[in-house]
Length: 556
Image (tube, rainbow, N blue to C red):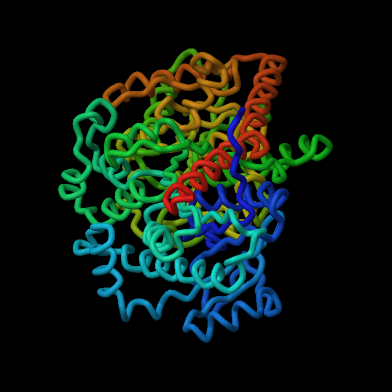
């Protein structure tokens, strides 16, 4: 007989990115919420930090009537939280907790954490305190809600608390001790040590087996973050991560492989329908060519090939350096038979939209001379200390009229109000012909997944979780003709990767319209395999694992 599968009847999830859009975890949670609600309705509650006090949070709709009895009881306990709906598909319940009061007892919290779990908070600095106080407050919220609303009720006998990243580890450990009836899951989306090793230009992969996580934490001055991450991974009922790439890190650097791997899915509700698609793509291309023409004083024909990279400004980890290197080599590539307009959509320390560029765009005129600094659409605070600008200057890539590859940096968040494009990122992504994400360190990789969802083929590497998943899906190394090319990258083969990207850009430029359309369709089909309806099963494996472990813990 097959064993009973435990399914939760109530789920709490805590993350710094609930109603707070700062990174990829926001996408994980916000796109998955509706799928969970399909099973549990309002028995899914998200807990985030109340970092928008005193100003309107565009992602949170407060509701004074929602959970009113509990909120009043919690306030009497000294717990202050706002309750409402997260303004995303499904509009799940969100509790935003005020964690400021707990700074006053920070030392007592850290002392108890050491006594119970040997978590070292002595070397804390930067955002460690902020994250830990939020995490502690989130634990108190779950404890309070459970005791007032769920405890002793047969219909709520399988409750799960899922904590995301080291920033919520303290809350998971608090729940483990104080509310043992709740099954705990901890998800690391990137190990602190792995990211630090890669970010400090040390070889991560070839020497992974030889690194000692605790020793490297000391060397890289991240002892406290590593400590909470490591101990949470070891003590919760179920430890998870987002890809096999990161799972290897967990096994070596945290001395604990994941119990379940939870690949990051998404929903395609932001992708235009077939009826709208061509019009939206044409509009995106027109806008990008209009901006580039005004900036560079160059007219582009409809045949120009538009490529891009995007994401967080981690110059080496995200492969921005190799993207620029490949474009530099493409300048001299005789095989390239089309003009290429290459965007770098990576937010930097932006000062403001360029007034001279705004004036040109507003005039509607055509210009045949470039603006000063024809490399970027927005001014930066420190023009002389920007890695991308430094690279472009080093390679003498000044977008001369005769250059068949021209590079435009867009160093702002494309939120629809940037002053130049005034369009959202997705509304421009649809106009691309090809995207490149040459990642060195990428636990998953939403940017390539979003690209293929918009029928835009992409180039990535086997060091990204997404790239490794594509290889597994295809049963071979992804090639350009498959819609996703997965280039083999190691600690030391940067030059070969740049060459491969250069060759792929030239190859794609030479494909016939029919070939391009076939590749675009294949890219979209790959994205269909990553929808939450296909990936949610992994979460139910984790729920089952955690609930089973909790019952063992309680001797049931």
